[in-house]
Amino acid sequence: MILRKKDTGDYFLSDDGFILRSFRPHERGQRERVVFATKKLGIEIKEDELFLDSSPEELSENLYKFIQFVSAVYLFYLT
Image (spheres, rainbow, N blue to C red):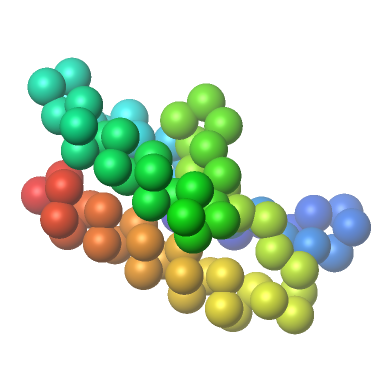
């Protein structure tokens, strides 16, 4: 997981593409469920990278949400 502070003072959370690139070709249905769930949670995808922009005020809430999501995907789909 990556947490970067932008020049604007906002933050950027990312998995650096780890989650979606970890799915094997035969796990297409599982990967699509993860992509669907990211959209419901407001997490965006660019080139297989999960990311979430956050203001400083929402950082703790968004960081918690992002970590919970990544942990759940890893636990239920990638282990």
